[in-house]
Length: 101
Image (cartoon, rainbow, N blue to C red; front, side, top):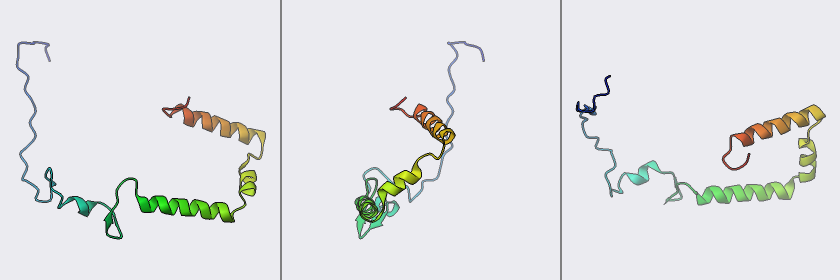
């Protein structure tokens, strides 16, 4: 395509669509609550209080019942080569993060 600045640009238009009766309109709250998860009659979205409570309860239960020291020992690398592999994997993962390098 030539770089002629005097020629008007033609803009591509979207095809005309029939309106969707389910489409949410600005300020309309009828449609909003149908798409969000509901727990006990309350709408929950990101930052779900019930999910946070469940997570905290499960962590507390694990810490109360589990042998954390034995789990930590079992998670240690079994050889020098495995330790090097884990360190390499950690470096690779950190290289993709925004915070640590």
